[in-house]
Length: 132
Image (cartoon, rainbow, N blue to C red):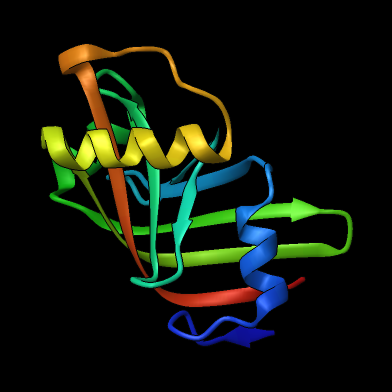
């Protein structure tokens, strides 16, 4: 079922705050899919998802090489599921990274310190599918 990313129902927002992992899917230059497990955070006010990672990660290399692109995050728990789709970009901006780490810490646990290698993938979500 499709949902408005700017106006998700309470059940969907709660599901997106629960501690679950997801798969992140990006397109490779050859058109193939790169799928990897990730932790992520959801900002309902801005319809933005964030994934913290580091500079050497394949997902960062793909986004930096392409200047950004479409991405999908899929979180599943039994019959509940959600897919967040949108345009993703990678950034090393210290403020964006610190904000993403703070959000991640609140949802999961404090992540390993990556120092200047910290990166964040920011996804401007424009499509949400799922059932919570």
